Length: 169
Image (cartoon, rainbow, N blue to C red; front, top):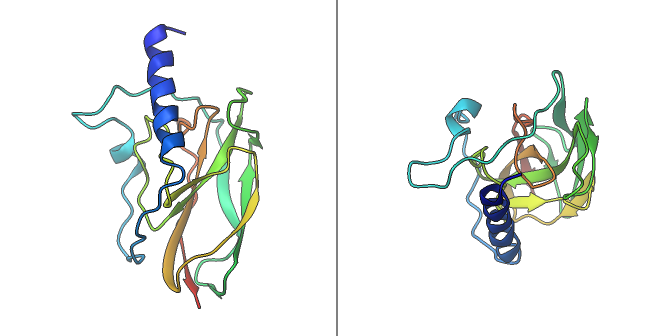
């Protein structure tokens, strides 16, 4: 691995960790088309170069076990992540055909060539968790899952669940 790659990866991880405790306002989930994965694959013109993405095997996928799309639920919201064709490991564990979950709340997919941001809308499960309980403001929320590799970078092709919309009472 070259030093530029390691420095860039360390910088993205440091930024992600420092943002972990900050909160942001969640916007109400809107019914709009989701951007195509190919539109999100590269860095912005002003952004850093894309990092090397780990290959995901054909047929691998991530999905929600619970809740189901359209569910009306109360806090705490219990979420179970499903995965097929790969295994879940802790962040930093560089095993083939593995990664860890990220929960996207009321946000679009991040750029796929960089580590997933760490904030109130991008929840990391780098400990290898496959379920969680969270509290959400009452109202409609759009949830999506994104698998990241040992450096929190989405795989190639990206393993992204279908979006689900839930209502919290």
